[in-house]
Length: 71
Image (cartoon, rainbow, N blue to C red; front, side, top):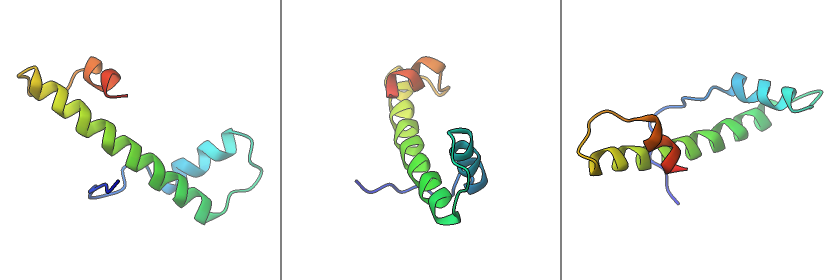
């Protein structure tokens, strides 16, 4: 699936911290970048679904329930 996201919202450093918190002793930049890229793709897909749900409900505001339903 192609994701057309403009910029990285989840930084490589944040992905590195997640990997370290999960038990990694050392994390390579390429691993952190791969995880950040994957998380950004997932987040973008969820955001698109949440926006569609809000629009379907004729709302401009994205609510928590939209994001939860987008999972």
